[in-house]
Length: 158
Image (cartoon, rainbow, N blue to C red; front, side):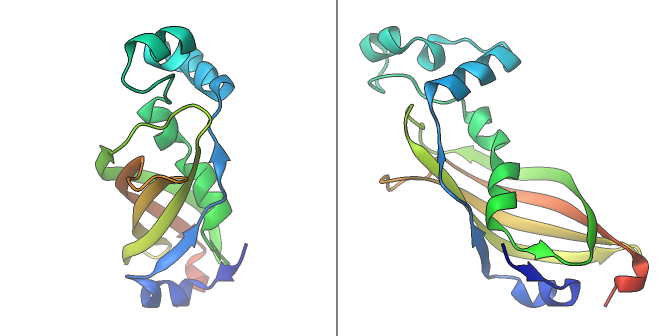
């Protein structure tokens, strides 16, 4: 994982900042997510029924499961800002679930910095265009605009 300085961030707007490692979406992680969210729809948790009754040929991941993996993808793919003391999720715009993720598939996140601005003495607000790719598929699992806040010591502000 490489690092960048707070002063470099604004010059990187419009550029791809990183791509995460591949994550395998197996039935176990889908079942754990179903248990945590109480979403036990058969297309997620019943391989035999999903194979027989759904158009997917088997179970698929919850869209929100894939969305919930973005922090992991961020940590494995995005550069660390040296001066950062803490990061906070601020929210998402335009989250779109584009294609189902079949059980056994691998996904990864691709991050393009689309905006950044300082807010107050010790915060940088960043927005990234995120695409979650499915290995060997043309269409992504999801796309979103993700806004986060980078907290830093005011003495480190460029």
